[in-house]
Image 1 (cartoon, rainbow, N blue to C red):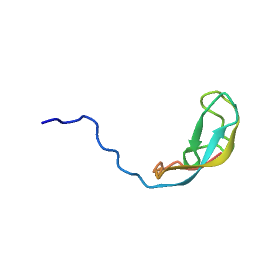
Image 2: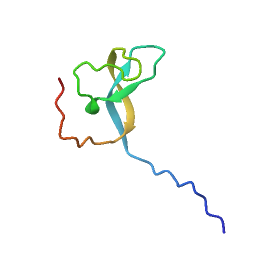
Image 3: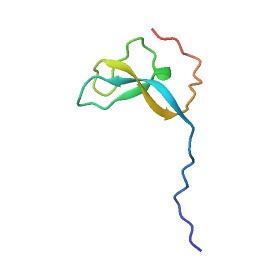
Image 4: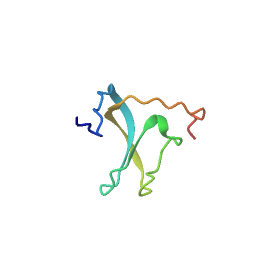
Length: 70
């Protein structure tokens, strides 16, 4: 009998999520809005400014007790 190590991927529910995308055309960095701690975040990969946008992503809840943005 053959057993594959790969597991079947379940279909995760998705929703339009607010994200911040890097403005540098050579960088593909982005982050979810609910994981940002600054009002105007800086890209963690290239230190460029980021702009707000939307992306279809799996639903993910941030349960961190520190949710204030400075």
